[in-house]
Image (cartoon, rainbow, N blue to C red; front, side, top):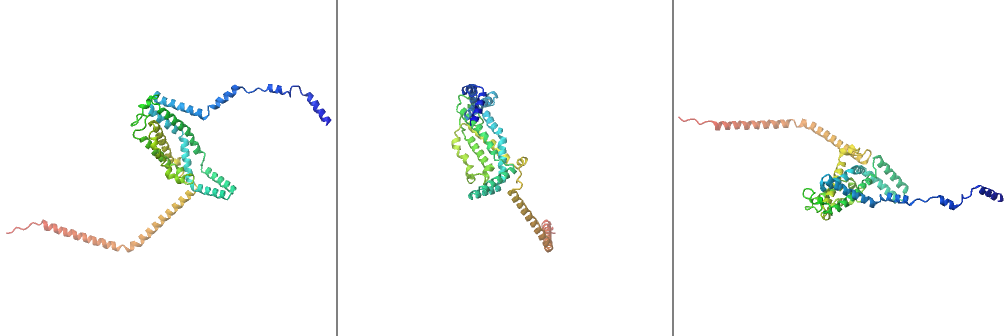
Length: 360
């Protein structure tokens, strides 16, 4: 013990003085400057939701004034251009989401089977089997290029559409500040700050939204949508908003109508079989239950057609020998009857055309 303390004393004497002086250590460490902290705060504060909303709001109004005044398009065309431009900018995401929904529709029987397997395993508290079924279902979707993150990416357009809606509502509420709103509309709605006098824009918007919901493959699926049993009622919801939206300014209704129309075009194109083939989506995915059912239906139809043709050929061969004489007799009797009528007609013509003889 004494030798160990002597060694520690000799080692401490070799260390220079001031190393274990905490005052010197504290003086050597410089605290971060307040300028750096303020720079970081201001840099990251630009990405907060409020600042992002303010910047988007200001940029959208400046863009509207630029299109309306500098390009001389007018406020109506400016609203239409920005509304459709946002939809066109997010068209790839929306189109990929529609194609992904079409693929999910084609594996609907498999998804039902996997969901039933997972539910049975969860009721039996067999978590290992449940995880195995989920893993198999994930691999099956990956095999057919189905990604569940794609529908989530299409939601990225919502902040832009929501900001543009609020900005447009603010612009339409100040016709004195934005003078072009009074006279730069279209057709029957020249004043964009007032509501549509005939209510055509809200009704058209409701119909476009109704068709969008009706054509959406996710809403037509009975396994992937939790509100599938309420589908027949969900698609009529846009019509219930007409009594409220009809009193919105015509500029806001123009935005809603143009956005719904662009979305309807994208949804209708995704349902076309030729376009789906271009993107590698056949009518039936290979190896799925729907493909096997389709092949079985085709085989049954082909067998039925072949059987009908065989029965028809057998009926023809059996009836040709038995029905050769009656048709010939019938033809002969018909010919004799026609000849008799012709002769009687000639005699009548001769009787009526003969001149009476002169009496001497």
